[in-house]
Amino acid sequence: MSLKYSKFCFIKKTIILFFFGLSLSSKAETTIHSQKKSLTPTKNSIDVKSSKEIRTPAKSKTEDKKILKLSQKKILTEALSSSPYIQKIKATNEKQKSQILDQLYSFSDWGLFANWNQSKRKNPQVTAFETKEKETESWSLGLKKKLLYGLDISSAYNYLNESQTNSDFLKNIQPNNIYRKNLSLELNASLTSALSQYWTVESLQKMQTANDWLYYEQAEELALKAVGQYWKTYLAHISYLQTQKGLKTYKKLVRQINSKKKYNFLNPGERPQVLAEYENIKQFIDQQKQNYEKEKKALLLFLKKDPDKYEIVFQAEKPEPIPSFPELKIEDTRLIKIKDNQIAQQKLKLMTKKTFLFPNFQLSGKGGMIPAGTSSDLEFSSKQSFYEIGLSLSWPLFSKSFYEKVNQEQYQLEENKIDFEITKQELKNKLSQLEKELAISYTNIKRSEKATRYQKQAFRELQRSFEQGRVDIFELINIENKLRESEIKKKKALSEYSLLTLQMLALRDQLVESYLKL
Image 1: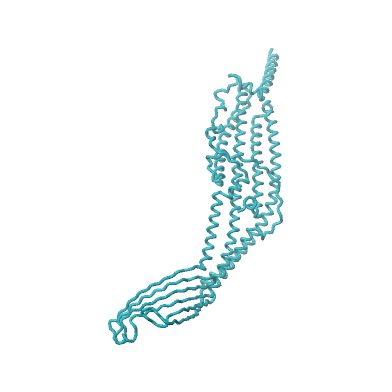
Image 2: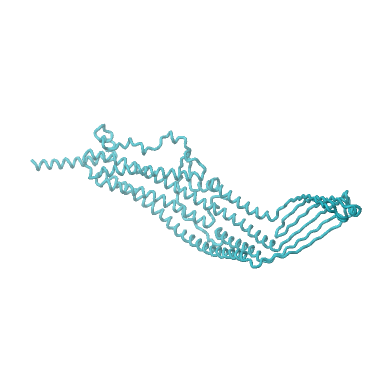
């Protein structure tokens, strides 16, 4: 009887296993789940339908949000046209232009000057040939103009009124009131100032050219930053979506584990492991959501959009073949031009400092028209002219301070030359390295697409095997995690390739011109 009973138990267990495998298929699972109480989870099991943590936000919270479709090209255009960052770059550029013009205009300024003076002098002990009291009033009004290369010119109208009380002896010899007036023209020229201003003006003009190049360089840096943030946000979004897909899978596994528990066909540790993974992925999905919201806020800052009012929809990005780049001369790139311009500016600064060691010759001349005599009614019948000329020489001798200033500029010039050669070689290396990285990155995209297809196929096959009871739950969890990782790697390969392409365009001074004419 015992042998027959054991055979009967074996057959009974086999039949139960067979029907249990069928019950875990998609169609049988729905039938079982629809039954009233036979397959209802126990009190210790998790009711995944009642979980509020993984539900998508209610429509009432998202109805007011506007849909914002974004692509790489759109974020580039917006960042370079209306973002607060490009506005800051433009403001800085305009400020630097104003500073350069300020220095240039300072060499040719106009000026208005006016002077007034009054004095009174008394002489208590008066001899026969002295003045008892004298009162003087003078004023002048004129214009002055700075000219380039150390020249200054000024023109003025000068007036003098002297009122005096003479001794009895001098009353009949000189008048009590004397008026003097003249119109003068004065010119000053300095040889040292002329040389210094000439080199300074040349340096300022080169600075203005370099400032325009720097504007484009900063705009390209902003473009790369904006695109980098776009892809960071995109990858955070993809990770969030993949985690949500994983959560759906774990919800299904929890239901299946609870169903298997009813038939006592659980492997040791199988149910706790699934429940632990289910809790972990719920925690992970919250982290992914927070990370996506953070990156989204940083991205929308480039667009001057309120993150709470917009929902981003990423437009499908397709990897384009590696573009063909024409031959490039390193010397024609903006970065090398800027470095070369710095050397030229430094040479001019050095020459300006050396002028302080030169002897300074300064020439001054003055001429004008004055009255031929004096009169109380300021009427004169004839006029005469006057001329003055002067020459001064100054030479700084034994000035160690001036020599050290010249040495500092000389050392700076040598530093700029070395920096020029380093930058030139680094740019060559970057261009060469980027070409190789682009080729590898494009290949990685194709490989990641194939790997994702194979992972999907493996997951589907393993999932069917698990539903039939032929594989362990841990194998299904492992392959499902690998599938999510594969999806993320595929998108990451696309982002790396896109960024490398833009970096290549930036190094070749083609990025800004490709997307926006500044």
